[in-house]
Image 1 (tube, rainbow, N blue to C red):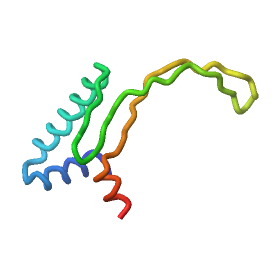
Image 2: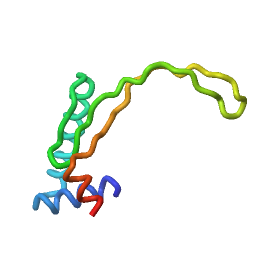
Image 3: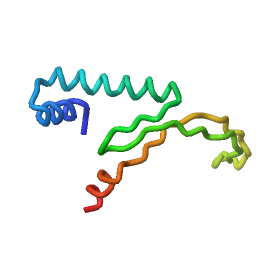
Image 4: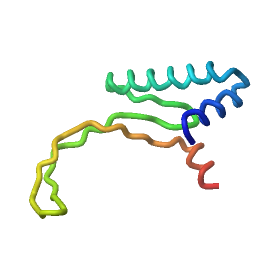
Length: 91
């Protein structure tokens, strides 16, 4: 689903104008970003939880040369689906 299709679907579900659905999705993205940057998880009921996962530095291997390469530590976004969503997908 592309952005325009998502906006149309949300507008239809909310029974509102497309520009309001677009603003709601934009606001959700900003709130999610702000929470994660602050190091706090964000729970969206019925959907799941977004949180930050700290990955430690490690050694990897270049598949072309076989040479050992150091991979730097980094933060990544983790998503854990809510039980209701996981159950709905598995029906």
